Image (tube, rainbow, N blue to C red; front, side, top):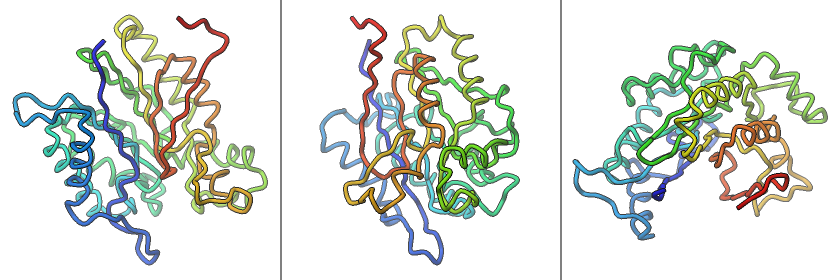
Length: 288
């Protein structure tokens, strides 16, 4: 199997949250230049200059393209930045996979909190099927959605999942069950937790099972925004700060267990603003 090269980015945060001082640290156009230069300096991949022969690289962005999901202009700017990066690295748009994060939600729009995200996403990626016709953010039905995106020539399949999901029917009960002593448990918008609905995982499993033969030699990579396990920042004292305990995927261990059961090989996520690598070893299985 040939090498699979992935540039994984997350939490770019284009724009700012007004009246808070929270804003991104890149000047306009600075993000693509900085990333492209850093990648070239590593000498880990040759950037193709030939438009007819794109760079053999996948670009994965695991959420939080913008600071405030209510601002359509920030989405327009964010996809312009992604496009600049794509051109600098000479990557095909077909090799770009993006999932939404908690900042990509428009929290003022409870009926369709990801409308601005999908509007911009759809204008950038023609003919995308990523939940655009499914009323995402409102519906709890996932069975009409395509989840598995296979690249047979590279023997890899990406499974983009959606953890920024504020309207799941059992969301409040799950939050209170997982964190009964949290002072935030009664207000879903005061913190930025995540949840991957089990109906979503059921649909993914069905699609993987239906395509088992075609995917048997492919590396399967799941992508979502929220970290499934606690990630402690070096500058945070866990004894007096609740960030590492509550700002993650509410059902993270269950999600990881389900993904392992589906033979998912790799999980890519963001949200914690911290580099971290975890390895899972199943001691109940024999390894060659």
